[in-house]
Length: 430
Image 1 (tube, rainbow, N blue to C red):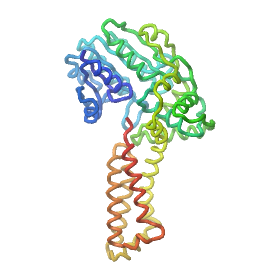
Image 2: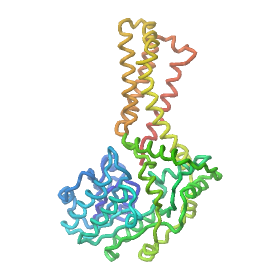
Image 3: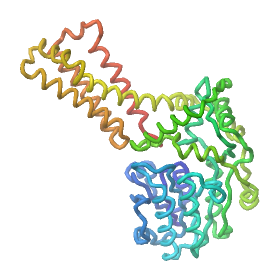
């Protein structure tokens, strides 16, 4: 069967693509970065398309030749400089569904979110609900799957946050959180494959959720035990501090990063993610597993512990590294100006002393800003490496006595280089 999958590089989409290819299906994957997707899944056909901009059915019709089914896995948590909830969940999805109807593609499986048929506290859930409505109005054999919080061996977003928090010896407990019915990624994928069968029921919407209701802190406790750590002490956070952390996440979102802790997550967690899995289980025969049982079926490896311990340190590392470069530039142009010019004069730079200090300061600020913005982070890190090496060479040539300075300005560049390389190694999110 030829299947078109949107959001094909996301947590659910990539797992669906991998399983469908293993089953021998012909896959067309929709993604933003098709070059990287093609390296990971060379047997699929990859098409570069931003769903938020593909709001006209004509943008989709050209992709429908020979397609027998569509699986829509596209989704974004919150509006930002890179993402549009209404564009992806509503307008882009509606255009896709209209194109499916025009092209005569009967089977459309749509990944929505649990609870959007009951309550929509955020733009995420409201646009998801409108996307569901747009599909139900079409003359298609549609299936709407509304999963709860999805976890599995691969992780992203909230599922990655569980592991990061599980590595902390003291667990910060957010206020106003409601229960979650965690569901396993492989169970969601198995459900998609079930409904791709020609004899599967259609025109149905199902909650896809786990069998137990867990509070957020209990989910983290299960992950901590899976990682082999003793139970952590719990530290309830005051509402004002929790609000500050969510607003900080919103700010990072506008820089192009996608932290799981943003105001949308705050509203959705307060609503909870619970439903009734009985209809899903009865139709598909899939028995959802409790979180602890699913975790213990695949013991944590040392790589899992590395990821958990690095997850929150990654955010701290990128933030501090960007601020470090910006601060060095600002200090060089401000209170450190005379020191910088003095060093250059001591190295016989002459009239080039002041321009050299100014150029270096501006270069540092530019590098810091490039690192701060997600779209240019990799470029910023490579420039940071190049500039650090230049400082070592130029400093040695102009003033070799710096190597003997008791404050170690030349020696301290080496751990900075090491941090730079580590940040490059952990830059990817998924």
